[in-house]
Image 1 (spheres, rainbow, N blue to C red):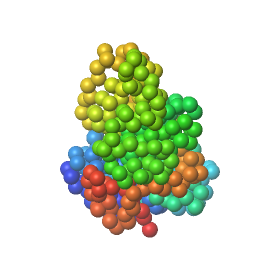
Image 2: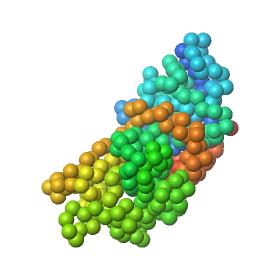
Image 3: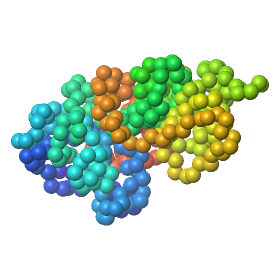
Image 4: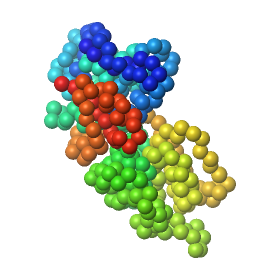
Length: 337
């Protein structure tokens, strides 16, 4: 079979490797779709995933079809369509430093347990949409960390895949208002398509003034203008986002950070002390990997809007290059015959 490996700094290759065989407690999945994450570009840039040396397998957002089932595996039938938890593989995180990656023709799931290592999705769900399960779990963890209530007014900064997934998550939790902020018009159109109540183009509009219009004004002192936004989610990773929120958050607001900030961000705790702002961080998906699956199944057409580009596995190098090029695509998914 073929699998994609980082072969050196800035280089990837599709290599021919032995097709695995399922043992008594394993299943073998024919990969039918695999999303490309921003981390894949980072791993390629640095030449692998520490502490592994040499060739490093890529891909951790798979969906596929079960083609072999070990004799001791329960509840996972042959032919089932599945999404996969890359975190629990005994040989290391799939596509994140482990021995296997999901940008491959087949993927061995060792010690396969339904509800822990895999979840079954109905056959009518497109594999490219099912492959969103892993990043949507990341988005859902960001939503869960903010503990939204139906009366909350929410702002999501960043309309990439995680921000869009979070916007859907907030709407499915029934919050009063979800506003999405970005500076790319096409992304904002997608935000409206997935259910955002309003969008703000930060390149053209005064974000704070627009939020006051949408969420009301809750100043701390006379003459001041502060949006009545209850929850802020940073899915952009830009220092200006944090600065804007800290300077304008109302008393008792919450800020969740799911974005990866590659440089330190300065925070003046003295200036925000009186706001009693709560700041929470969100990384990964401690419990959400299959929590989000049922929502994807029920609302798959809404989630489908997040997939911006699809490439055949024959063109996987082009897919990786496109995903790594700023502004070239939002969510790239590789599909397999």
